Each structure stands twice: as structure tokens, then as C-alpha cells.
Length: 174
Image (cartoon, rainbow, N blue to C red; front, side):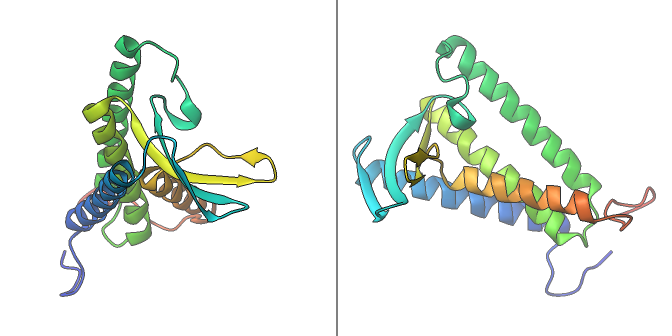
């Protein structure tokens, strides 16, 4: 079903968004690794936001960072592969007209790929966005993590407020 001359096809749209997220993520991490020494920090907004070069061997909030590499690396590779497979499955189920859902899935996909590239290249993920406030410190994160968070937030909001709006492909087409 054509979507019009200015709209990309569903899979092209998802691929472009995911590739843009992956590219932006990898470019930003390359820059941080090139420009800052490990643990070097540059205040952007002194009281709450710094750019700080750190490496995370674990997952979100350094989950599993202390587990031996022999277990941690395969775990994150398998978890990433399963997540990427699930995301591709869900993309196939969403109607081409549901651009916000497709953007959300593509954002999570691009973020997952960005962190997977880091893990495959070095066994760790480069993080650098460092948020803190009055003694409270959020674990550093990166562009991939940001897009994953935004994508999941869109998916959650959609699931809460979509109601009975059709968003999946019909059984006979799409």
C-alpha cells in the first residue's frame, strides 16, 4: 500500500531511524574516547550536568559489572540478540501508518545496536552523560541509552493511552 510520495516505506523508515541513532551514538562515543581521558570530566552546567568519560562493563546501572567476562560477555550478547530479534518482530507487527510506534521501536533498536557494537569492540560501553543534583548522582549514560529510554517511554505512553485504536497490521495485509 503506497504511503505517498514523501513518506518512506515502513522498513526503510525504521532502518533510517535506527541507523541514525547508531551513527550518532557511535560518533559521540568515538569523540569522547578521542577527546577525554578516562574519568576526565568537563562541567557543562556545574551544579547538575557534566560530560565525564567512563566505561561500563555491566548493563544499566552497572548491573552484572562484577561478573567474570567469561559469563558477562555471552550474557549481554545473547540478551542483545534476543532484544533485537523481538524488536524486529514487533516492527513487522506494527502498521506502516503508526510512525510514533515505529520511531519508538527504531530508537530502541538503534540504541541496542549502539551498545552492542561497544560490547563487541571492547567488552564495555562508553558512557559520558553525567547528571547529578545536590549529592544525588545518576549513573552516567550515553546517546544509545537516551534513545532506548525515549523509545520505551513512547511505547509505554502508547500502551496506556492508545485504547482501541488499531496499530497492528491486519491479518490479511499490511
